[in-house]
Image (cartoon, rainbow, N blue to C red; front, top):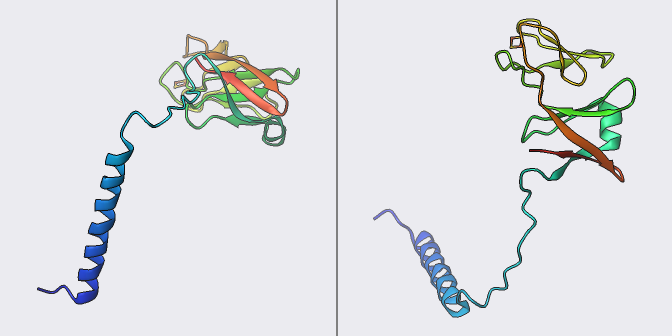
Length: 142
Ligand code: FES
């Protein structure tokens, strides 16, 4: 029925592998596996989002998972914030001189720390704690 000998042998050996894997699992059992708890990043902990070198080169860092950005302010402070505009959710962008954040949608402006300078947004951007350790930039995501 359309299956040549080669395919048939392939199927047979696949079956043999599956069988032996299942057999192996049976022998191991559940309790003999040493459980190694991993350090799951939980909320409220500092997480590495890049290196100081990357920050210096690019001027900002973006954590792709959370969308949080880290910027170095003109006064050399590190600032981490959620760039989601509180007005309607567009993504604000830092001006070239890193003195302000501007929303491309309806013109809201914020200080580099996220305080509202100009509406329509009427709430500040969410800030996060940020620090460096060795060469790494860490943000406390809560
Ligand atoms: Fe940012 Fe409207 S979404 S000003």
